Amino acid sequence: MRILVSCDCGAEGSGEPGATYTCPACGLVWRMPPAAGIVEVERARRTHRLRTVASLGAVVVVAIAGLVLSGVGAAALGALITVAIWVVVVWPALRRRHASDLEALPPVDLSEH
Ligand SMILES: [Zn+2]
Image 1 (spheres, rainbow, N blue to C red):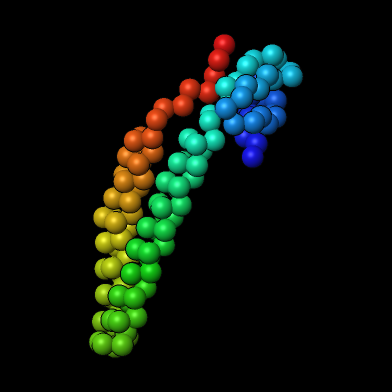
Image 2 (cartoon, protein in one colour):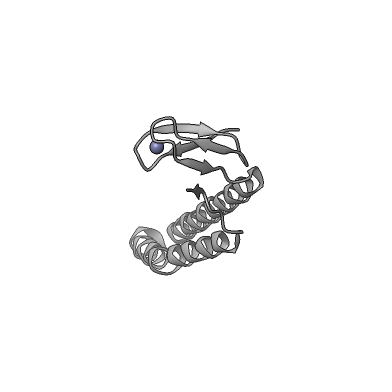
């Protein structure tokens, strides 16, 4: 596994996790995060994606249930309300939770001057 580096000077390269990377263009040294930290960030991202897909799946289920139970007109209104609730309540809550999950991870300082 290699980590992509976009240096402050605009040059790009890649380095091993836990090692240092010296920019060939400007000489700035970057410390790569340890592999463990990357795995945790990836896991948090995956969990966030799963929660988002699952909650959108619930919206679709509610819309289909409304269509089956109450006909097209009422189902369209119900779907609209459900989607609105998802956008206003569920999505921001998921994003807040993802942000706090990421904040709970140990901090990684990447630059080393
Ligand atoms: Zn550079």
